[in-house]
Length: 280
Image (cartoon, rainbow, N blue to C red; front, side):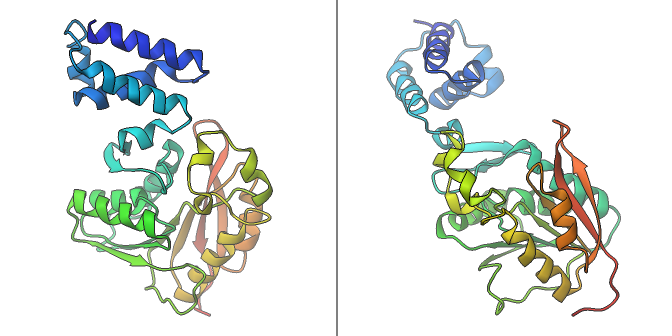
């Protein structure tokens, strides 16, 4: 059996169990099994699969059991950078790249900007900003043990010297943070009552990275308080499709808010510019 034939078999198996993106996921899993890059694999379809078949079939079975493909491969791209991911940490998503876009636009030309990334998880947001803005100083705050392990692993992978990682809780008022040019966050924002009805794969991700409390807004209050007390200049947060107006109200005492739509025309990010002149 050739690698091309093996890929067709894997694709059919995933389609049979209802996987929406069977073709791509089967390809990603074969890349993981062979250790070949995307282009390298495409050039090797006529090669005999050899001893790859049993390993690949194991990966396919894992995916069929509901384990996200990102957890199986162990890495996932975000803004063109590979990040380590696995059980216990939120998987980076394309829409979250909007936070990085915001940082690059807002901080362009600013000398040594200070950035804070709350609920950092893998660190994909803050670390990407630190890499793309080399003279920035980026603070990444994460509460939970497993995500913090991935955060540190990804920092080591990228070998960034302008990053500070803090294992702490955004709700802990004893923790202090510097005034930031920009606060970024992709916080938990799903309503508690809705968490149990999420897709099977999403339910494999840590609930603490998804559950935003009864109304899904719990973390935005904490971020607003942090922004107010530190006198930080601006905030950009990811949000659910029906939350932008509520978030604007939460930040009303801090500054003027506007929503930004994602590629699906959904209000996915809220940017708030500080208008108050004093720090409370």
